Image (cartoon, rainbow, N blue to C red; front, top):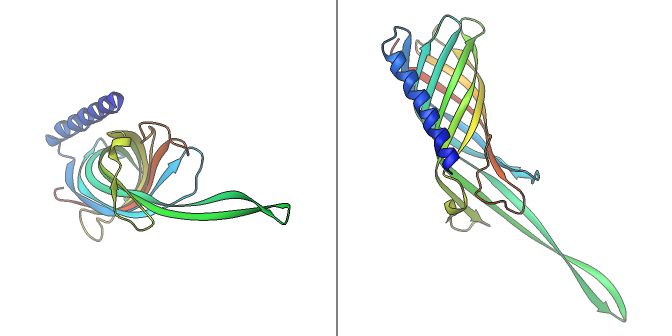
Length: 222
């Protein structure tokens, strides 16, 4: 947990430095962003999991280094998690008419894990054309809550089994719609964890979060 906190502090200071440097610059913009998440938690043993729909909403700042490159720190609230189903098979031996016959019983269980995070990415953007750009950079996910429900039951708080936060990455593509609506951009991004979410290894291995995001940003200033 200490390593995650140190990474968060480093990323935080990078973000603050970027903002403080950009506030006095002519090519600095800031605004709001929002969109949808298609989230999934993945186990290291490749246990089959299903995606869960979430949302994200927050703020961003953008500093244009030159005509091609820009730095964009962000701070936003994000929801995610995963769906899962397990098929437990128990083997039983029954003695029928002096013969041993093997029978099996199957038990199906399904559930959801829902997460709430504060996410802090710092993206480096590169313009391919005047409107089209690609981006990549590190991000820190601060875990606010994680809850699990099994077979439609009530949510159970399981945060004690997970780390305070994880260090990860983001890669994406965006398009500037300034020709149609000044200040408006659309984008898509894939994010993943470098570090494990769980404090201790579980039966299915270590857990990492992965997410596909689509959304819009709107700049308040130009």
